[in-house]
Image 1 (spheres, rainbow, N blue to C red):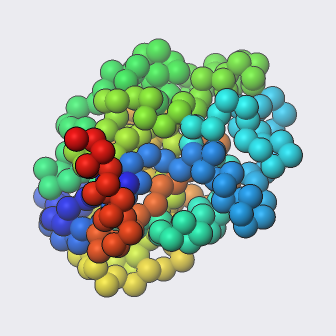
Image 2 (image 1 turned 90 degrees about the vertical axis):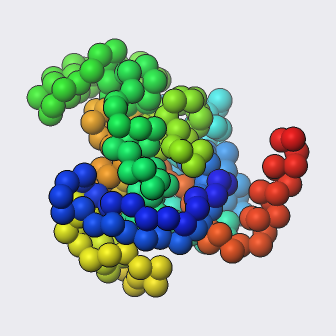
Length: 269
């Protein structure tokens, strides 16, 4: 996990109505939850493994309770919001609120993207632009690419979809979080103060009431690069998707995580 220091930022789409919002410090997973981590969870709890996908989608398919061979370090997908929340609880963590996720991606400098204010070249972030080999400007270009992509043999087209976490070193936030822009979108918790993300809601508070609402934040391998903006999200149904995973958070006061972080820092020296 990496430490996200307390601070303030303008939440949502950068415009004149964006609210300056304060947030307390927390730790967030450096990478998205992986297949191998989710396997440890399902083995310990006997929770069902991700469901059997459509024929031909072998890259996503768990068989006999195991993830696809060689895909242990890829982010787990085909998990519902409830699945992700259960994993977080088992791990002694929580799913991030939408505000925590956005702040981890933007920091106090309020970058439009996790790494700054300009889109990365297609090869540097795992989005549909990378799969297309070119920039996809607007919904029409994305739809044109998707229509052609969908015609390919499923095993071929899906082989390059997911990549091991941390495979794109330029897709990293100022706090050291990888893959907030691409790879998979991530399940996050909505709060009572967060009905609208684009600057029109009330200020986020540390004691904000958590609702059962959920959103998927950030871009993914199936979305165009424009969706990698740090304030982008989808209000999806709580279902299983090929391009939605998650990562977890804990409060900065968590002594166990502090001890681990100190140990890692000493080891790095």
